[in-house]
Amino acid sequence: MGRQTIVYTEERRVYDLSSNSERVDGLFPLFESSFLVEKRLTMGIMQFNVPLLDQYDPMILNTAYISGIEGVPWAGRIDTTDSGFGIERAIDESGRLSIVWPNSEFGLSVLSTASLRCQPNPYWLPVELARGTLHRVRNRAVEWQRLGLKIPESFGPMIDIAMASFIDAIMLQATSPYLACQKAQESIEAAMSASRPLCRSFISQAIQFRIQQEKQLTTLLGVRLDSSPNWRLDAVAIREAFNTVAIRSSWHSIDADVDRVGYEVFDEQMKWAKEQGMRIVGGPLISLQQHAIQHWMYMMHDFDSLYQSACQFVQRTVERYRGQVSIWNVASGLNSPNELGFSDEQTLQLAVGIVQTARRADPRTPVLITMDMPWGEYLGQRANAISPLHFSDALLRADLGLSGIGLEMNLGYSPGGSLPRDLIDISDLIDQWAVLGVPLVVSATIANSSANDADAYPKYPMVSLWKTPTAPSEKSWSSSSSYSLEVIQMLLAKQNVHGIFWNQQSDRGKHVFSNAGLIDPNGNPRPLLDGLSQIRSRHGQ
Image (tube, rainbow, N blue to C red; front, side, top):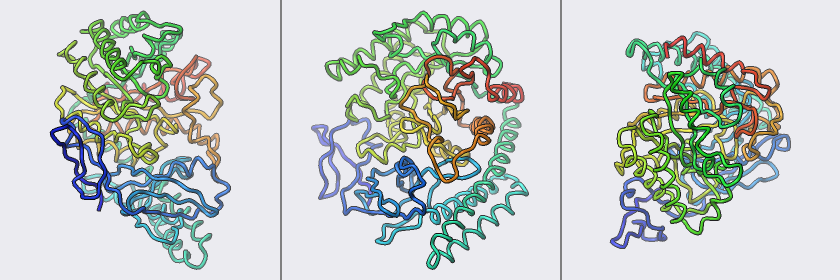
């Protein structure tokens, strides 16, 4: 048995339909078609052997989670052993393990096994990751080929090497498990190397197809402006790369009781953007991400006080800038785990109130709400957290007037950001969210350097700095801008992505994500900025 549908009583309480279930806290009736509850069954345990375990930072093991066929992580408890680790869940269904794992092509990125069943004997992790990686890359090639993609010539020989190494790993697993794991790593390396030209070919052909259909791409290419004293100086350097700016006229910065910002800097940014002929996205107005929660938010007496204050701020801000913005991004990170202690019901109530307030204050301008960490990795450690996809689906079904959904993927930052992902994972995520049938606006950051960044928010450590048997070298960092550009172009290749934003303007002064700015701490443009300018010029943005 797996997930059971929940129903609502006249008293607005939620109960599982199964006979041995426990009661779940009530939710609004408008969300009843979108939320599921786990049926408590016998504990399911998956165990994995990891060779040379002492060479891995324990944080890597903590990134492991198991997901089902929908790709939504199940909550589980990770326990390390002398030879590896195990994940214990409340259900014993088969599932797919995902974990950050080293490879020479991407440094560190999430790899996944094929679907595995719970069994008494542990799996050899590298062998199962090789199986899953090979399966994923080959399947994606087949699917894209069916859509008309021309597979690059280099793909076949590399995937053949990956297959041969995997077969060797399977043959050696019973007699020489450590040698089998070495062969499995070789298979992973070859498969990941094969995925890069495959994805580049897809990007090139998909964008060309879009241009043939649309003549000129209409995707918004934007950057989120900082509110630091140097924002205008840095904005001059980045204006050639973008046709849109996001102005974060956010609650936590405007109503902060220390170093009060007020609306002045956002008034200046609005004026500057209009002078440059750039479109404007306002917000996110309310954020519950780690860096946006101020100490005065904890001092609110109760949820109702915070709810009223948030809605009042949204109304005040939307009325102030009504007619100046093209899109309102009213909230971000409401799905994120935080320390405010809101229940799911309260979080949903806050989302509904914010959206409805913005719609009343400005009925004409499109409104979207942004989901942080769209893969939902945090669900693997939190039994009662909200799935970003289910949360979005519930809001859309409620018919609140949302025009789209935003996705924020800060890749390589954990906890609090998204784990590092390869290009196939980026593509699969966008395809998964396409089922909602609404436009997507994606904002992203990716670290551009491994240098120490003392001015960054300390709660977003970079996954890529963890020690591993094949730790990223400075050479791999020098190619990070190339990978960032490929991520942007993969998003550009997707027709349901209507906007792409770089989430950090500069690393000068205090900023959120380490080494992710388009401008480095010394005020110099990073190579990524020139690449983004070329993308805009090439596609007539």
